[in-house]
Image (cartoon, rainbow, N blue to C red; front, side, top):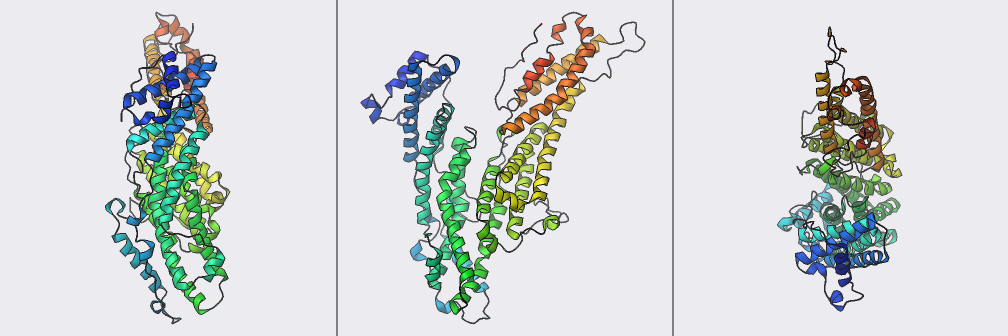
Length: 579
């Protein structure tokens, strides 16, 4: 959908439009929804809101303006809720797996009582039934073995939701917007999850269950976990990013975690109760059956992790994110492993084998290399998490090649690896599981990317400020070629203006990292320009039209660097120097 034409609405007209849709004062406004009407009416209202917000930024705020923005935000909140409700329904999970009534329990005779029976029989039985269930899946969910996002809301509605969210958050109504979103989407996620048939069971409940009943519940949990990770959670994360990414600081992450928190906790709580029950069970025929089954069942969480690892490795998006900012895949993967780290105590007992990794001698260019010898003391679960991060980096390296500008490719890698490092540092559990050795490697990776960006960008700029080629030996003049000097200043001006215009539109979302890179850029540029200007300024100013060549003072460049990495276009021309 094309954005509305920015024709603008006069302030007085804007206030009238806002008041016309005040549901507290107008019966028509209470009965009708703006976003159910025609596009022209919607755009007029949004333009009116924009004009009110602009007027509040540029002048003393009047009572009328304050009242108008409050009315507008209340109205947009109602419209936001209405759009969400109109397009929200649970994912029909009965089309993904057999209903709970069709889950076949394994009879006692199928579980061999002989102590020497192969424990793989039960595991194979589980896999067979999973295969039968997956064969009935409709085409849009052809496999639950990888991330399969589905569009939860039509693109037209997403456009409207994002338009509302941008205005509410910019006006300071962040909390109201997030609360409305969370309440509506959480209900839909909970409803989808209930269809999967995962029950809330305590340790005592599990210990009292007959083995055949418990086995059925475990199978149902396995299917539910795969569907939640591969479809339900992935789709919700995608929807959050479509509506909120870039609108406010980590808004999409906050909304996603709030939306899926309940089902995610219930999934892990079931696994934790099973694990603890297993460790407390007495030696008995039933206890032996459970232990034998668990030897097969414990492979399933590792299977889910392996499927996720493969999905991250093969994630196919080939469109570079604008401005080299954080890729949605990076956010999703780090949220996923952060959730896993929260349940370390349970999963460390279930994940008992190391990941299957590539080696430096494999020669497979589609798989990253990983040598675990330096971190071999880590648990299998910790190695899986590290391996997922390695795979993510490998995929990001590949995506960085989509940028035609080498400087932007380095900036993209710096942004994404820095995000990974910050997520690890921000979670004590994840930091402990990752370990200092690998965290140092990641830190070195983003610093290397920052250095590569600086080299790629500033070498050609600083090349204009060299002395070589300016001095004329044997001349009766001052020994400096004025024509060469003028061309050198012209080249510097053109290249720096291009860098300024381009890199102002690039984005570093982390405020501290953005400021640190600006300082590094200034430390390269400003001393070199100040020195060059000090040595050669008089030679240019003694000639005609010096302002055509010395366009900028040092202070102008210092100000211009502050525009870098904000993600917004700037004026085509830098501010000219004052005489």
